[in-house]
Length: 264
Image 1 (cartoon, rainbow, N blue to C red):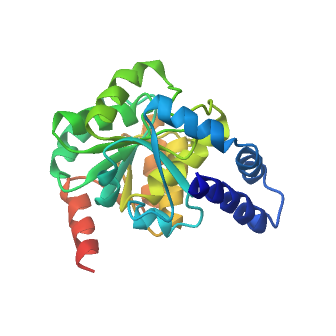
Image 2: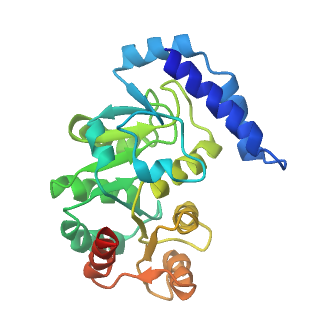
Image 3: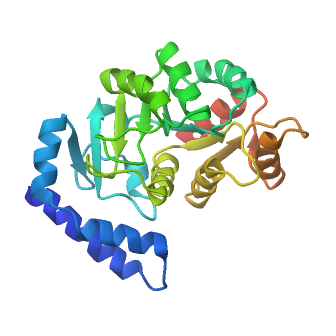
């Protein structure tokens, strides 16, 4: 309990120190942390079968710890040892077409040395999780809410399979409800925990592109699927390729770069 309370105090103190300019997102995080009731959280954790680690625990992923804004607490359900393995993030549009599914069926079987990270959203995220499961490749779902909540309903069964066999994580206590700003926070964890991030399809303004931008800010590898120039779901990815992201034409376009990073 002391470790949990100390971590909440760290969150608040650190974020106040960073608040040099007005920032609505950061302010919401601070207020959220200040108002947490640790005794109630610990009771909820026990009832929900959810555990937690802090940034000081050996299980905490090193890549995430190196990021600009690492979560001080990670709540989890499943196999925590997966956080120590090398991860690769796959995200994309909630409106993902059959192109995303076909591409990931081609790519993911070549990523057996990695844990596939995604956000359990409808569309590309769920496709990435399902194909990983079908190929016996470990996968981690990063939640944008507490473990006692789920959204969307359509991915609930996939989440259940992941929690039984792999891992779900969240920086929010179990009873935390859905709020838009929490999904932005979730995106930074997806990008920060991974060696690289692939966006399959994205409109010109897309949450998955925010994840990609965070990955680039954290000096991670940024990949995009090139797409049909007449498709609105390929404009975002095609523009990012034009700006310097790595186009993925073959699975080796990902694995070669990730393997080179291991050597270096």
